[in-house]
Amino acid sequence: MNITHPNKIKQRVQASVVFCGIIILIGKFTAYFLTNSVGILTDAMESIVNVVAGFISLYAIRLAAKPKDKDHPFGHGKIELISASIEGILIFTAGGIIIYEGIRRIFNPSVIESLDIGIIIVAVSGVINYLLGWYSIHQGKKYDSIALVAGGKHLQSDTYSTIGLVAGLLVLYFTGLTWVDSVLAIIFGAIIAYTGIGILKKTINNLIDTADEEVLKRICAAINENRKPEWIDIHNLKVLKSGSSYFIDCDLTLPWYYNIDEGHSSCEELRLTLLSIFPENALVSIHSDSCLEHFCSLCKVPECKYRKLPFKDIKPFTVEKLIEAKES
Image 1 (spheres, rainbow, N blue to C red):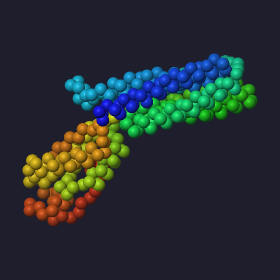
Image 2: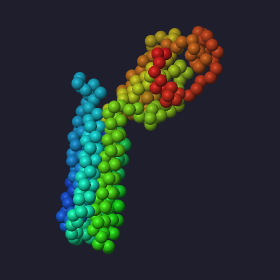
Image 3: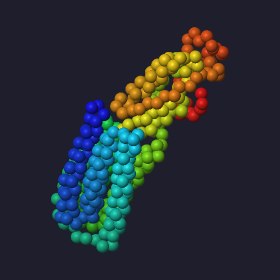
Image 4: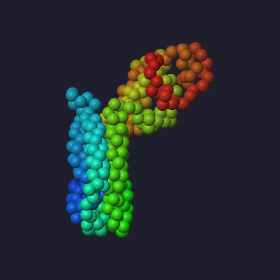
């Protein structure tokens, strides 16, 4: 119940975003047909991307909610990254089309009409988009969904470009300079394309399992805060993220004379410490190593009758130390 509930919430959030996106799409194209403004066309074109990407994200979130099986032992969470990548490609493509149309209109200007109505529709759409984006990002961070966060950032970037677009349209409305319309299209087409590149960069990093520095820092802080004397060393830390699930693996160095039960208890304490950071979907695997003589000066285990060297100092764990690959 605790696993499926957040996934259902994510699906409802994305379904709401898609529904509102369709309404906004209709409104923006109505504004375009009323005004014949290529600037407004840029907003309408991005709304097409919003809706298409929204449907893709909705499908991805539903698929990501499926439990792991024999063919997908780490679950289906990576599909959210595929979804976000497709969204990034669509956004970049839309930006390129808008730039092309803006350049074309410079040499072939069109008559612009009913601009006041168009400005109102675009402005209202921008406000709705911002609120939808905030809601999507908020829920995405709460339930650790990169698809919702990527979609929300896209919606908010759409709002920021809408603010500039409305300002430019007001200049056009009061001055009648038709070339302003084309310049607006080129500028905001470039902004849209840049947004797409940013989303692609983030999703590619996650697809190739690039280390998440913020997650590693959180783990490091939790280990230092809850450190036990027998946790002599922790190394070979690896974190894999699939959707909203985390898979954590590390090696824990313990006193060599510990029996199986003592070793298991110490590993369990570390496992619970790591699970406290990711309360919902996390799988932790810990391999125990036995200590060697050179650890004695760094070991705080009290009354160790096998100590070869006097205790000198113990230093807090760092991210670099935790991820270091070594045997023991």
